Length: 81
Image (tube, rainbow, N blue to C red; front, top):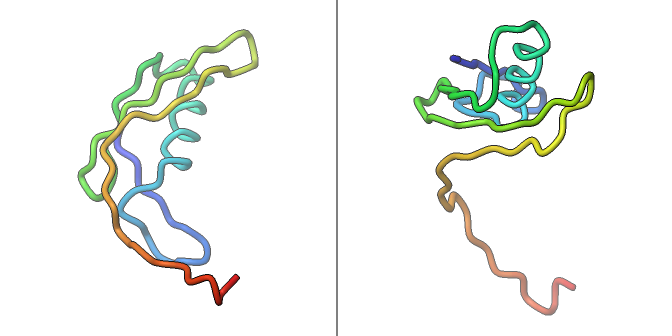
């Protein structure tokens, strides 16, 4: 499945969105189009894998598998507390 997302606050298309990808997969499952696990390709080219269990109308054990990277580091000084 390929997913493109537009995020409020960013007010633009983003390269990836885990929450949006999960929502797309669960809706696609409700429509009978996919079953777990689902491979998702984001606009940025990243591949995610979304796993879930469904019991009737309830989704359980939903989890996202994919790469990670540090995009920002900071230090909080005691004076800021």
